[in-house]
View (cartoon, protein in one colour):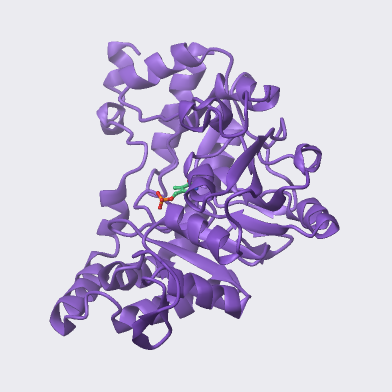
Length: 379
Ligand SMILES: *Cc1c(COP(=O)(O)O)cnc(C)c1O
């Protein structure tokens, strides 16, 4: 960038954060203050009325019958697996390209993740690879809706039905995304959501939810997440459970945040559309299945020379990320869980070329254009 370019306008020197949560929350500050004030005043910091209210609102938003608030998205995954009666000796099919939490939830329940490759265009779970991994110990498939898209649920549901397996959604990156018009969270046996601050629906701390149409499963998850208690009975613990509840305060804040989710998702889609139109041919956003209306949790592109682009973005004060640099099957944490790591060439190749560009809902076109300028300068 030349000195003349730098003088062109006030936005040129402004850094472009990867995700600007303070700017997001500034827009609803008075409502967040009110929600916090109400919880502070009534004093039921665990299990207060805001939890049941948010659970009902979020279940309705997803088009499902039940939502159970839990401590975080990783716990939501573990509690679903345990709630389905899956544990030691069972295998769960998991895509190699996901955040490690998907596999951690399986391991925490005592089951074994079986990593499989992803589709080369969408980088989401490949139904043929999933089919090839099914064996006598397979109990479930976890479809991960990565980057704000939705995994190919129709072929995966057919596969799961054919083999009598549970199809679980990891929807931690897909609040509000749709597949054939239906929302993530209503597409499988149960779905795990995370409300980590940086997710599309983020709390101001940790939080998560299990969403399902299955009332018995919802009750089992609720009991497991509350020390194995019987519902409405503080004295009897039927199972050894966990303490993994959604805080009242986070639930109150999440109700406020849910009110802006659709508008923020639309803004994220707008950012991605701009990238698709303006980025050079050497820097292509990852494809989205036409059956999917994504919510663009991450604007992931594939590029030939990642180090050069990272250097240019960093020099220009533009935030970036890599999701994920090491596929799960190559993580030391999971070495030995299923013997030698399989070769999963699509996930391995993609891990070396992907880069996530800023897609904050508050970004604005001038900043998106600035990111495109920097990408073009190294292409
Ligand atoms: C964030 C995330 C999780 C875990 O959620 P936490 O609330 O951080 O425990 C699980 N799966 C995916 C795909 C995620 O992005």
